[in-house]
Image (cartoon, rainbow, N blue to C red; front, side, top):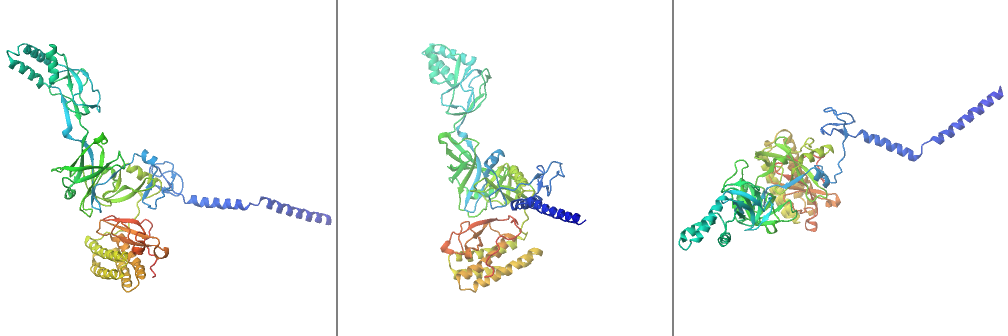
Length: 592
């Protein structure tokens, strides 16, 4: 019995040893644990994956399956690879742009720098257009110009015509030649008849000298140019006056531009225009206005403005689209802006247009919400949201929007909420006067002039006192009261300091509240800019509002005048999008 227990004890001990050894052998390595942990993270990432339908991008589900609208398999939403810091911009490859047939056009109107932008196209000079007609009836025996686009010279043979009437006239001439000494009047009348039919003197002399009638007469070009129309073929019978060819001299061209009523104040005969065409990017051409149409087209509400240009080398071609710049004395965007209806993704008064991002490494297009005015022919008037001279997508806009939807970016169907609130025009005028006083303070800090900046604060205080808080109700009233308190507090602290750097710290708080006012209520200014200096206050960074595009830094003044960058552009009447749910202009120095 004792041996049995001893054997059992040995057996149990042996089993435990084997179990420990086996457990050690199958224990996962640290790298395996990391891989397992990574897999867990992958599962967590997968759980955050969104799935959408290629036909209905508005559908976004947290798991794969079928589209509830059409039953198609859902596909994962891809993350955009755009390197742009602008969440409203969508980046595409040049190949994708070409495949989508995306075309862009600079829009017309007067920009803030005082340049009037107009669009139009190249047309032949109507005075250089000649029709080659049949001077007598007959049959086309031969064509020397068989296709349109062929260049011809004055006097060049275009066709050969057989005409029984012309044969009779030649016989009359030969008979008159025999008795021209006795009856010179008959001889002269016979010659004049052939000249009336546009036979040249050399052709008539050849008939007289040969003494034989010519059965086939050549039709000659009246001027040099390009054959733009051929109306006959070999064997056709033509009557007197039938147009055989149209020949246009393309050495002189017209640039025809569309101008709206509000543009006329900036246009005068003799104005020099600079224009470009898509076919020659980077090249700029010059011409002068020679005619302004006295009638307005009732459908488009535009009149034609004509400039003339000498087309040396025939580089320019009729029907080319042009974008023209005309320097004016205007300093505001007083002119209406119109865009082709193909550029608009229509969703009511507030619709979407895609604007090409300038100077981007890859083609990028920013979604822009605009306020539509009336439709005029094939164009829409834009009341707010665009600036003259910006380049917009006029063909392929739906392709860009669809690609942005599928990549999970903002699009027409997925727009961010707006920070802006609707307020009366009177209230907006009053806060614009506050902004004007703010700009005086800012510009004096740019000049490192604390005393003048503090004098400007008194104007700011007066304009704040003129704002009628009863013009805003509910949420707008509560927000304004909070902003008013912040503006007054920053203004008071800035006015009571004698140190320029300390004043600049309080100015950052003033700027913070002024940016809040701008984004929430808007200003009655064509355009203002949100600028940012990353080096202000020991690299903490600070924002300010500017009325000019050029960077002039109020936090450094003359020591680093141009330090900074434009972070956002605010256009008159355009709502400000809430892209992150927070104010990106939140000051880093509010405790100073």
